Length: 232
Image (cartoon, rainbow, N blue to C red):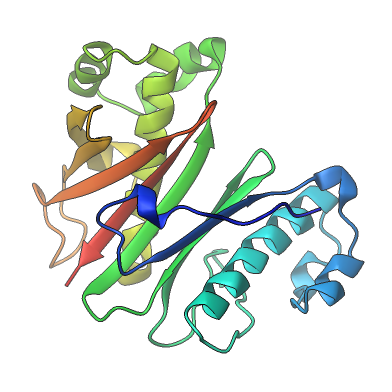
């Protein structure tokens, strides 16, 4: 069910202290016995879940286990909190993402890093894009995206993924949800594959309005992988 691991951190110059792996998986080839085969815990709450959900969970935890191995760390089962966010062991910062039978996981134990978020999104189709893009971006962001060479649906996919990455990075620190309008894309650099994300309101006492973050990305054939790293 799981394909060969692909290390990706070398594609991100800012991730030299982060282990980032991806793999592909086939939902049609999934069986619950794979949890036992890979020595990964199947949570009680997922035992009645559909195969797709179980396969996604397995792929993410399989990658996490591989990241732990690369860092010479003993693997500990990573269960989900009530809000479905992963609970990482003490002194480990990580992020997991999956979409369309592709998964990725990033882990670090660097004391220089406070938070980490990654997100993988396959291209939103053109019709769906026209229906939903105004819920993802504001008019200024729309102007930035339309000024790039990206097809508009790819630009919206990138915007969606970038905002998911910042939320996934900051949520473990602030434990509060925000809508997409709480952060804005204020710069896009396709050559460096980098965005600047700016908070439009206070998220916490530390992460306040106008706080800027770099979001780096990789463009695959039909998808984007975005990353946000929050340094101490």
